[in-house]
Amino acid sequence: MMDKPADTKHSIHELIAARWSPRAFAPSPVETNHLYRIFEAARWAPSSFNEQPWGFIVATKNDLEAHRSIADCLVEGNRRWAEFAPVLMVSIAKLAFDHNGRPNRHAYHDLGQAVALMLVQATDLGLVAHQMGGFDQDTARAKLSIPDDYDPVAGIALGYPGDTEKLPRELKAAENEPRQRKGLEDFVWSGVFGASTLFESPVEPTLKGD
Ligand SMILES: Cc1cc2nc3c(=O)[nH]c(=O)nc-3n(C[C@H](O)[C@H](O)[C@H](O)COP(=O)(O)O)c2cc1C
Image (tube, rainbow, N blue to C red; front, side):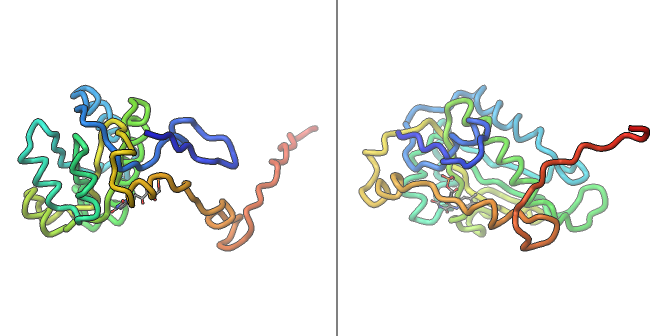
C-alpha cells in the first residue's frame, strides 16, 4: 500500500503526518498485544472530569459472527471494503456524567481524543485505521446491545495495510487522491473569531530593576 504523508506547512511528528485512512487491508490478523496497546493509548486520553466517556465494541475475525454483526451495521459503501479489515469496532460515547447524571456535552469531544491517540499508537505499530460515520445507529444499538445511555458514534476498521491494486477500480481512484486540508488561516484566529492568524514573536518579559 502507498504511504500518503501529509504535505505539511510546518513540521509535525512523523506519526501524525503518516496516519491516513486507507480502504485496503491485508488479511493478516492484528496481534492481541497490539490491540491492548492501542486501547491503552486511548485509555490515557484526557477527558472532562476524567469521566472517560468512551467505549469500544470490538470484533476480530477470530469471532466471525461478531465481526459480521459490526459489518452488518455499515452502509454498503463502507461495508464493501471495511469487511476485509481484520478488526472492526464501533465507538460509543456515554452521554451523561457518572458523577451527577447531567448531560456531558464533551462526551463526543473526549471520545474523539481517545480515538486520535489510539490512531497515533496504531500508526506507530504499523497499523492503519479508517473511521466511518456511515453506519446505521439503530442496527448497531440492537445488534451490539448498546444501552440507551450510550450513543454509537463511529465505525472503525483496523488492520495492516493491504494491496490497493486489489480494490475495485473506483475505490482505487479515491485511494490515490491527494490528501487535502484547509489552511491554518481558515480555522485558527488571533484573539477574536475571524482575525487573521498572526502570531507575533513573544516579547521578552522585562524584569523589575532591569
Ligand atoms: C467521524 C468520521 C467519520 C467518517 N466517515 C467515513 C465514512 O463513512 N466512510 C469513509 O470512507 N470515510 C469516512 N471517514 C474518513 C474521512 O473521510 C477521512 O478521515 C478524511 O477524508 C481525511 O482523510 P485522512 O484520514 O486520510 O487524513 C470518516 C472520518 C471520521 C473522523
